[in-house]
Length: 115
Length: 112
Image 1 (cartoon, each protein chain N blue to C red):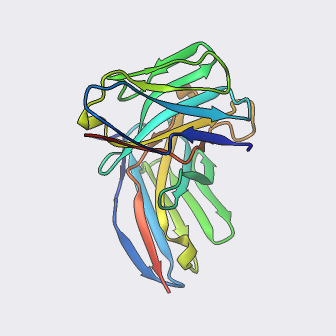
Image 2: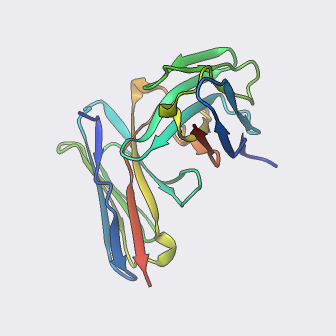
């Protein structure tokens, strides 16, 4: 299907485990983003990428790792999950070449629970 | 202090009411202003986009930006139950690339 997809949609993991959240977009957008959404904080940027092999930290990067070897994929890894990383994670993409270059297209989200 | 402040609500109105949603911000470099709508258990989707100050209308929705007061608003006329969602304001500066700064979101319920 065209668009932006995330997997898994739901994940329960234990403290200390490594977990990877996947994001895939079919538009060949140059920019991709990872956010977490928590009550009282709204959407906070974790990491973003301007192109393949170019990534940069956002507002709350600690405890997370990203990579972008292909334009269409932007996985987010929690190296050693903590309970404070329980959240809903959204991936988004954006095409700087488009007319509304600041529009970001969001995936459906991954609900992660760390026990 | 957060760069973008938004009353989280919740806000509950009867069908047909005019709804006013607001955000204030502190970064004077913000030039691009957006409103996203997020239905329960879904990702946000862009509703309105405005550059600099002024008003923009799209059907029942009007976005208003007052840069001198660092204040933006979204008005919904003739509100419908299908408008029940969380509304997030988002902003960006020219130097931010494509990065957006979001408000916390206001949860709106329109009752039939």
